[in-house]
Picture 1 (cartoon, helix red, strand yellow):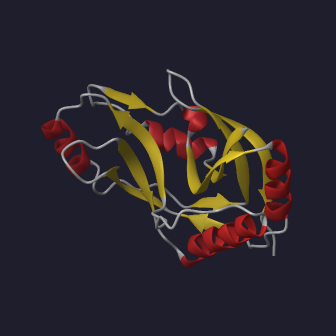
Picture 2 (picture 1 turned 60 degrees about the horizontal axis):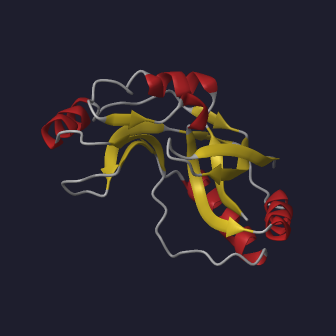
Length: 179
């Protein structure tokens, strides 16, 4: 069984832009550069047959290329002990429509999806005993963070393997966006 998710890969220049803000917080486990992505939908466990059906369904998604705007930072959950530090992505009509199309394709492939609301973001770190006052100061200093628009020309199906050092993501299939 594979642990799957669908995501937009972040190009090298935008990963470099994100890397510039991945510093200055003690106790933070920063996301490795090659693992940076914007998750459209976490699927969960799937057999090889299910993975094949999922890839076939995703291959039929038709959506035009669009620009992604990365800006701002925040945490999940919004309490005194956040588990995820993220860079935000603007919830443009194009991005939200792609997410809906991906969900429809996954349902057609037989996936049971959670009803969790889509909040477009890129996980850049996971706090490990990071002092709350330093986290608050960091978020305040990054409030105006923004990168130039990124052309989104594809989305991907990834396999995620958990380990004590964190999850490792491997490309299973990629799907070009077109008219």
